Image (cartoon, rainbow, N blue to C red; front, side, top):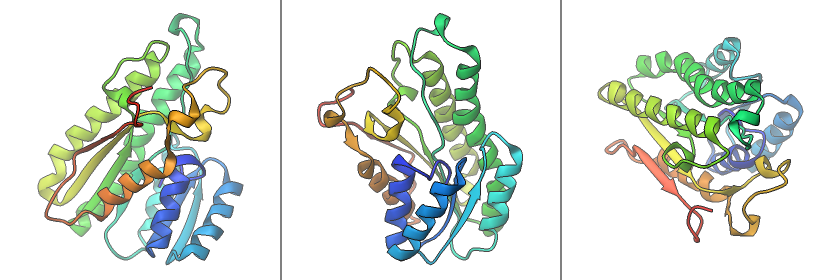
Length: 229
């Protein structure tokens, strides 16, 4: 799982740990990953490996693949790494915009490219891409973020059509506003009390992972009770 150190990724890891899954946790920061690994083991995980690294680095995907190669059972990849910067595009730092595309879209492609051969060798596997309603809805001040998420959604759809006959399921999770640390540095954002908790999205991810093999869940859209904020 990428982006595992906080927010949706962390909550998903804890839910899966309680079910006795073996986990490989990835994020850039090693210290919070190690702390999470300890909690996951205490919650019941069969095993937990930590791979610290940036998903835009090809070596990170290779390290994740090497780590999961040792595990038993169906291989599941949860692509959750991402961040957002809001603002008028013409006033934004173009490097920051490019970085969003690199992490959200290219990073997802890199980790999937690294793990897909293992799934094909097993004849089964599941890829869950954590995206956003921004993949389908345009938001002013979020042009690069919307573009990155929309690209990742189309990547997921094409991947699903290309590999479903080979036993690989691909699910896109499209949450609305979710209360995670991603909002912490922002001065302006929707009221956090109106957002979904990260556990709501984590439960949807767990549902896609645990779905019987007689079905494929292509997309799940979740919004707060008040709708898109």
